[in-house]
Image: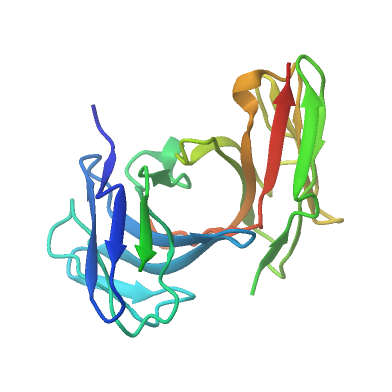
Length: 116
Length: 119
């Protein structure tokens, strides 16, 4: 079955450590996204990538970094510079190849990051 | 910049009844898309329904329908014959129409409404 996988489901980090969240998709989608979800604030865009080896900052990119070396993969690193990283992180992807799906984003199951 | 506002933090409804969730948005764009996403306790985001701004007809998907008022910048979701499985957080979201063949589309989300369906 095609879909988006995120790992791990739960992640604990000590202050001062960098951690990397995994996002993989086998939908052959071009674009991928990272969102952060906090209580009462909905989802906010961290980074997005339209093609391999290219990515752009979203609304809250400070303290985060990404890479897009393969079409299927878009890992997110939460660095020690991120002041309040405890949140739920969602990865998504989209495609223009199917006109019916051209404006839909498909989401992964998410990773809950907690800073101890 | 676009903003999306959901003024109802929580709603509840009895099973089999109808409930309406409110959403307003602010934009200077004339061509855009609006979405309702559902996030059940599993936290998996699921697209419920979408509306293209250039279409006057309101979108419907089975028990879900919207009331799209473009001039008022309002986009409410009506759930008919509510079921226990409808219990979730519901997010309203906005996306500008994109041109040039790009597959990227930034979603701007509202704060969400927690809907509880009671038996």
